[in-house]
View: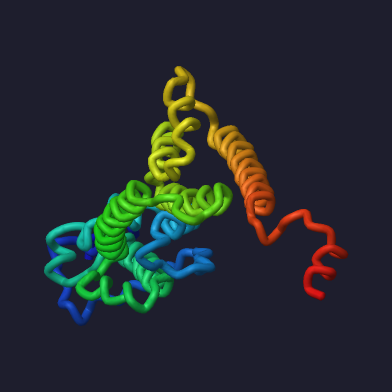
Length: 262
C-alpha cells in the first residue's frame, strides 16, 4: 500500500481505504502547563483582578490562543481521514491542552459562578461567557458606586471620616477599572459638605486650578479645627455672660450671706 508523508506523520494512500477498526489510535502528546489557581476565586466583584492573573498565567504558558479560540487545527486532515475517523494528531493534542485549561478556569470560579460553565465545551466558550457576564456586572457596579458618590453627604462625620467614606467608593471604582477624574472627585467632596463649609466651597470653585485631593483635605481639616476653636470660644464667652448676668451668682461676700441667714 502506497503512503503519503505529511507534517503530521505517514498517512495511508486514499487508493486503499481502511476500515475504522483498522485505524490505529493516536495518542495526543501532553503539553507541560503550569496552571496555579488564583488566591481569590472569581466572583461578581473581583473580575478584573482575576482576569489579570489568568491572562498572565496563560501568557507565561504561551497558551492565550486557547481562550481566544484561534489557531484551531482541523479535526480531519482530509476527506479520507474523515471516512475512516482518523483524527488529526494536532487536533487531539490541542483538545487535550484545551480541556486542561477548561478545567483550570472552572476550578478558579466561586460556587455561584460555576453554573456559568454549563453548556460550554471549550475553554474559549467558557472564557467568553464569563467575560460577557462579569463585564455587565462591572458596569452595573460602576453605576451603583457613582450613584452613591452623588448622594453622599458629610452629616455628623468629621472631615477625616467624610474623606474616608468617599475614598472607599473611589477606590472601589479604581478596583473595577472605572476610575473617576480628579475634578469629579473634588466635585463629589464639595457637594456633600455641610453648609458651614460654604466659604471654603466658594473659594475653591472660584480658583482656576483645582487643588489635589490631599491639599483639599489638609485645607478642610485646618478650617474644621478653626471652626471648632471658634465654637469653644463662643461657648466659653456665653457661659461667662450667663454667670455675670445670673442673680444667683452675685458677688455678695460669703460672710454677709451667713449673717443674713442668722
